[in-house]
Image (cartoon, rainbow over all chains, first blue to last red; front, side):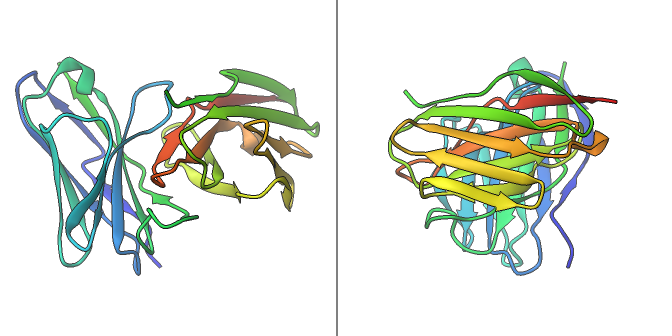
Length: 116
Length: 109
């Protein structure tokens, strides 16, 4: 079975630009969540998608948005990039809605974004 | 507010035992997870505790005390490949995962 794949692995943007990060979930998983991990910190929950709809969101502004497609893959879009957006962005998939109890997440290796 | 505390860094010797502690204060509790993250790689699942007590899985064990808001991850027979960050995460009342900053474990020969 294939794991979670993310693209691109690294990218550099300038302040004010927009970025789109992509994620393919593990086969058989229908829920995707996105996390931001700053250097030396734990992941911070951005949002979760289940059946193509956002069904949970962390403390991130509206310029962070996303999509989930019928094949369960997902995109994270960030508009008006700020320097503090520089981080590792992790995508994780799970077989069922994560908001229903013990649910093991399978993470991708992440997309490292640098904002200059 | 919600808070997960774990030591920033620990050092141990190959073949020894190390215990990584995690204390938490969250709005509700629906389980505690431990993940391992090697530098530049994805976090990978190690253990899940929702009831008090010890869960053993090979060289790794995880303990939970809900009344104390406390957990630990115990690693036995340490190997060089165990050098990684260990992340503690709690599922809160909304089943949202609250993550600690991680403990960087350094294994010395």
